Amino acid sequence: MLKIVGWRGRSSNTPLWPTNYRVGMWAWLLQRITGLALVFYLFLHIWVISFSAVGKDGLSFDLVLTALQTPFFIVLDLALLAAVLFHALNGIRILLFDLGIGVRSQKVLFGLFMAIGLLAFGAGVAVLLPYALGKPLS
Amino acid sequence: MVSIGVKEEVSEVGLRPEEAGIGVWSWVLQRVTAVLLLVFLGAHFWVLHFAVVGEQINFVRVSERLRTPFFIVLDLALLATVLYHALNGLRIVIVDFGISPMAQRLLLGALWLIGILTFIFGANTLLPFITSTPLFYR
Image (cartoon, rainbow over all chains, first blue to last red; front, side, top):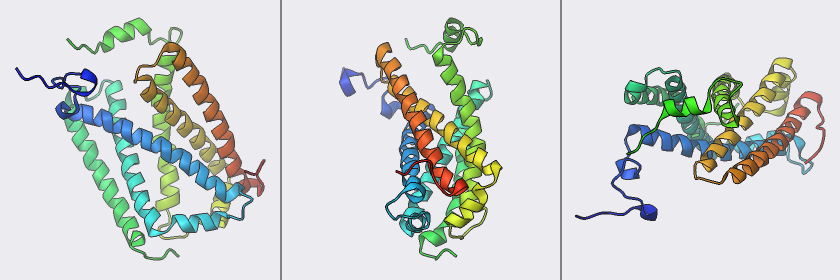
């Protein structure tokens, strides 16, 4: 019998091996990945905003914000929106499970929350896309 | 056999407040801050990006808003809440890699120190909008 041995000798023939992940495991993994990305963004955000108000180096809030409102950063804002929406909506799903609601229909709930997330992301794209394509802010 | 015994764990650890150890408290606080973030971060996102679409955000406009006690309290509460949620989330991810109890205690202390220092740093960034000068310059 062919036995494929996975990372660090772990058997690949278990539900914990990525190619065997079902919905719940992907949700768990993505919650961690978006969480870590948001921790990174949070400290970057606090650091960048601090330049604008507390810096003695001639950078003013308006200068920093003008740079952050260019198309490049607006596209990054959309990535941020996607990460926050996933983390928040999947987080609500986890909170519901903790209250004993919907555990048995967790896959349906995942689909439902992701649909809500896609709609909200679509609204965000609709608002921000013109500025990402270079429409000037007033 | 893989068993994830939620019920067994609950009876061992004890969910009554007088029995709760640090793990249970951080679990509860992670949920509490999650719900608070839905409110605070939702408001933060809405006010900055969607309340007035297409307007250049600048120092004068943000100052006008931040001089009201409501937004001062909101922003400081958001800062504290998001720092707790982010750093506790980071702690959970690191602890799940399987570090020793001593390393877990060191990690907890280090993250609290980072959190408190970052809160002071962030609150100092907010001050110029309110009082026109920060406590300290960076």
